[in-house]
Image (cartoon, rainbow, N blue to C red):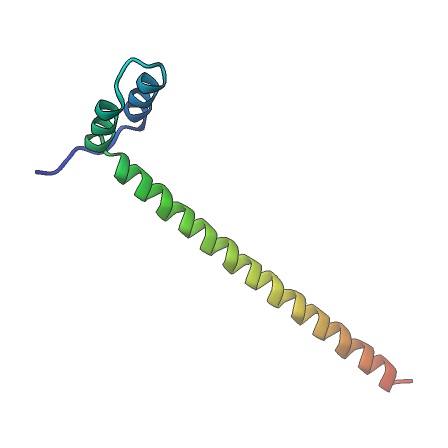
Length: 84
C-alpha cells in the first residue's frame, strides 16, 4: 500500500509536541516515520546535491572563462609587442 505524500507542517507539529514535552520520544519517532520524514529528507538531500552540482558547474565555467580572458590578454600583449 502506498503512503500519502508527507505534509511538512504535520511533521513539524509532531516535532514541536515533543519539544514541549507533550509527546514521548518513541511516539514522535513513530509519527515522523509513518508521516514521511524520510521522504522529505531524501527530497531535500537530492535538491542540495543538485544545487551543489550546479554551483560546481558554474565555478568551473567561471574559471574556464577567466583562463580564456587571460589567454586573450596575453595574445593581445604579444601582438602589441610584435608590432613595435
